[in-house]
Amino acid sequence: MANTAKPDLRPANPRFSSGPCAKRPGWTLDALGDAALGRSHRAKVGKSKLQQAIDDTRSVLGVPADYRIGIVPASDTGAVEMAMWSLLGARGTDVVAWESFGSGWVTDAVKQLKLEDVRVLEAPYGEIVDLAEVDFDRDVVFTWNGTTSGVRMPDGDAIPADRQGLTICDATSAAFAQDLPFDKLDVVTFSWQKVLGGEAAHGMLILSPRAVERLKSYKPAWPLPKIFRLTSGGKLIEGIFKGETINTPSMLCVEDYLDALAWAKSIGGLKGLKARADGNLGVIERFVEAHDWLGFLAKTPETRSNTSVCLQFTDPAIVALSDEAQAAFAKGVVATLEKEGVALDIGAYRDAPPGLRIWAGATVEASDLEALMPWLEWAFEAQKSELKQAA
Ligand SMILES: Cc1ncc(COP(=O)(O)O)c(C=O)c1O
Image 1: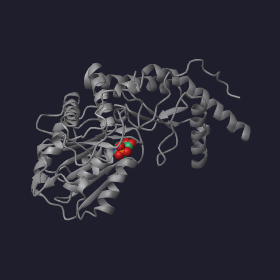
Image 2: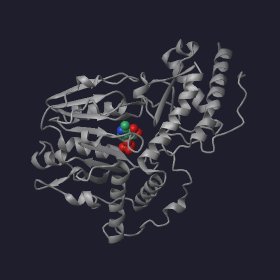
Image 3: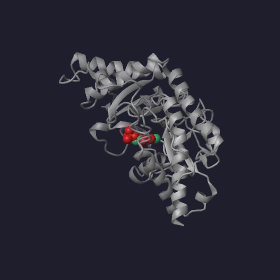
Image 4: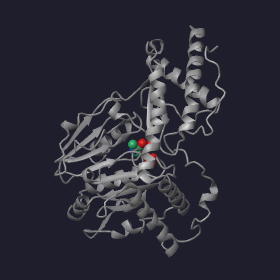
């Protein structure tokens, strides 16, 4: 039996998944009542909603007026791969990775695109690559917030303003929670399903004037499928950045994104969103500081994510277990919490070290995280006493 009593209070919303993430507080299906369903996305009503999604994205994220914003197919993955396939190969490339999504872009560059001049810079889970090693006169592909390790870029200071290469940044679990220095970023991508708690399947692609210049002046050696094509006859397809999507979007998802953006504005825009995520991280930090059996996977506080918070069991009795037994222990804790209905989907990502991953982005309520914390201790103690009994 556990030493710790079962807590009385339960989170009102047990959804702490790292994607799709919790809907905004107060969301119901009624929020989608105004969706342009059964209408063409090329009709005035459909196109104006797509344009609105672009405009609101610009105003909430503070995207510079001369950067283009497009809605593209296949969620964040679609947006990143579209950028990689369209832009890379013109000069040498550095691909930087410190967790599994970054590693996915390494695979794309090395094994799929088979780039001739590519350097791979990698760091293990919990750490970040030495950014001084990155050559920004080459093109650089990286992830701002590593969702599976909870390690984020501390800031954009390592990126020179006068770089020669393009920076291609997968910002899907950072956008709307962390500052993105657009002057240092040439391509920024994200999906609606993450920090704003929207729906998946649509990607956002933000391009700097320098990225557009590259698109106009460089033609990759490999074929580009229609859903990756941003140019036609050497000219940028400007319509993509005015709501004329390459193929058919879901107007239901568009409506949901518009609702999420309206909520974001109502809580003070990016400042309000960041404050909520920072406050949520603070709840977890205070709990971790007070409990020596739990620790952050991120080695240094300045790289600690305020969205995908990854935790490890640091109790010596657990650390002493084999990798398999540690993974089984963590799974046991996660399953216990899920069975109680107090936390859904908070297991570490399948390739990451065993532990917990708790989403702390803006749509999560601090009060729900406060309510969850004592449950972590209860489930940990319960799992530990099971271990003892089995020994
Ligand atoms: C950093 C990062 N990149 C890419 C993806 C893939 O996103 P999507 O499934 O929206 O394509 C995710 C999803 O969790 C992610 O966290």
